[in-house]
Amino acid sequence: MVRRFNPDLKGQELVIEWGPQRRFLRLAIYDLDRPNPGDRTPLIDGLVLPDPAAGGMRLVEFNIASNGLFVGRWSVLPSGDVVRQYELSFADGQKGTFRELWRWIAGERDAFAWHTETYREGAFVPGDIVVEWRKSTGESGEVPPAAADTSWREHFAFLSAGGGFWLTLNDAYRTEENREPVVYGMRYWPGFGGTTLHGCLWGAQAGPYPGHDPVIFWRFFTAWDPSRKALLVQQSGANGVIGIGYEVPGTGVAEQTFTAPDGTRWEVRHLSSQISPDSLVTRSLQRTTGDWEPRRTYTWIRQRPGGAPCGGDGVP
Figure 1 (cartoon, rainbow, N blue to C red):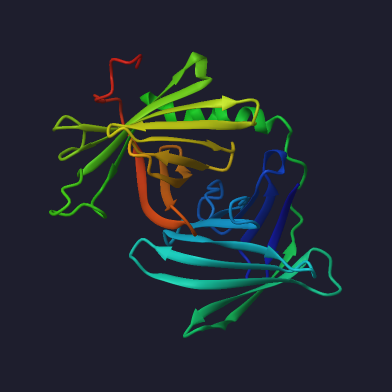
Figure 2: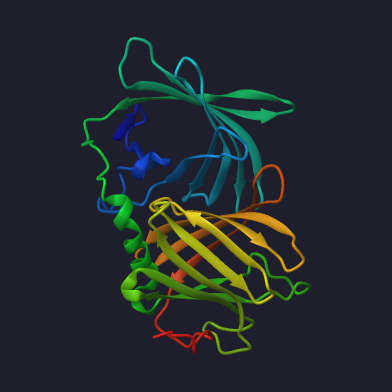
């Protein structure tokens, strides 16, 4: 079911919808006053997912405008009100702890008041802004049942389109001391008529195209698992590390357990958001025990076909 709400601060729309088979809840806020009415890139794109390991529900959101990452908890009170508490991390290193309260407005159907609180000096301090959201007159309806079985094909097609070449700069993380690559590159290509997806990730000290001492770090394999109605996501590293996990189609969230040759294990959550037909943002979080810790964020731009250092294994 899709539910749409408009705030009293005009010009925005909140869309809440269930994903395939109600495995997750998606929330997105759109700017309705953009110069290009056809641009449906959300201001904020988020997911609410069950977290069996910790119990309850996890909240993951990305603020595209400010490049901010929200990671926290989603709780529903006996009254039906919602409490969202999360850590907010920005690309420039700023961090903060926030809490949102969504309270249903008495006497009104499909309307709630929203306000935020900021954690300062050991306590949550209420903010000055209170926004009231009311159900809009936009269309709503059930998510088509077939979406769970077809959306992954669109995902494969997006990543592998035009030769499947992607590049990103590593200037936010590279230093003269760590000597990490200047650029990272990926290539994706379909297999078995588009029912599987293969890929690799490499790094190079000079660019923009690989050709100067490129080094392959990871090889990828993704396939639809009909028994779990999810995507099997596997990757293996040049250092012998292997990661195996699953991604629910339509979420852009993959969770994998990685194991090193010495038996060390850790979990990684990858979040991917398509920004345009030729760009996407990827974010990663990691945990060994306890909460997820944000790691890195990259913006990838699609490239014209070039020489990828991962040929010789069935690459077309």
